[in-house]
Length: 363
Image (cartoon, rainbow, N blue to C red; front, side, top):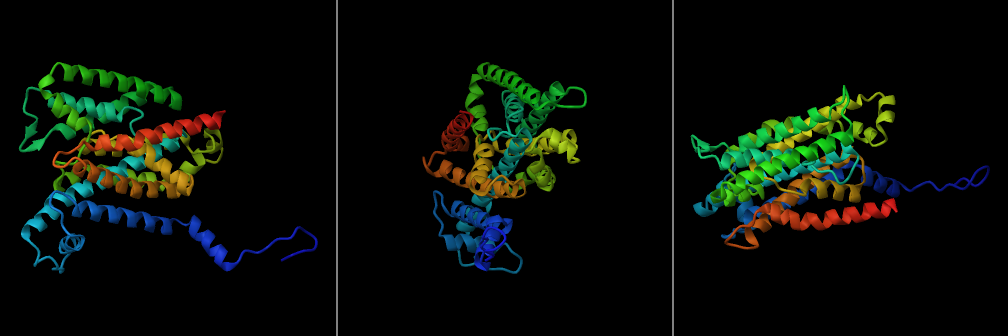
């Protein structure tokens, strides 16, 4: 302690310094998040109409590793249920949840608004219109046993985003407010067209609504390859720009003064986030609120540093959607509730809470 010549200053103890370091470091937090994700996955793989003990579930999964044989004494039906039915669904739910949370965090960073979500500029409405057009078509929408609905949803989502971006572009810049307004307009047009198609094809309304509200009941291992080629590169690009996203939170002019090409970064990150969200929506339907509430919850707990917020949003987004899907298939068993209804029940109150907090901040 120094008492003369300046104000007294107490040096922190080594224990306090270490605790502060852990509080700021990513890896301890990521370890906690990965533990929650693994726990949610194991719980979802074990629980269902035919409950399977957790240790048996773990043995079945570990037995798929080379040279590991832990499930030979377990019933074949258990092995088929875990590996062929539940685990593909759990993995898909985790992947979609992680993707939507990452895309939502990116949108919130680029637009500097915690109320932004991955569907802000037309991804959901475009995907819904594309899927609806195929479902109500009089032609068979399966080719070789493969449904064309995910492909149509993916194309519709990307088309809607491209139109919104093209309409908002002014010279070489894309004003943020104009892009949001263009996205709202495109979403309204796509939603109106989707509603028109459903009204004029009432016999397929149930099928359409089931897809729109989201679910993973048709998940299988092969469908992962419909998503991973788009999600992995997009996630890699977004995670690389965590520090730049921190800079963008200051102001666009200040970011330019610090050497950031703001327009190029916005285009790159919005394109990557939209591509990832479109791929996720194409296989899961329109699952709302994941991209809104998960990033904001991470921000409230661990702060606004996007170098940590982005990976933590992915991990907790995956865990959140796995648990939501578990509720969707068990809370009203043997019937199944679309998972979008579960996330809406969780997300809508949280959204109202965010609005209330923003009103208090303004006044």
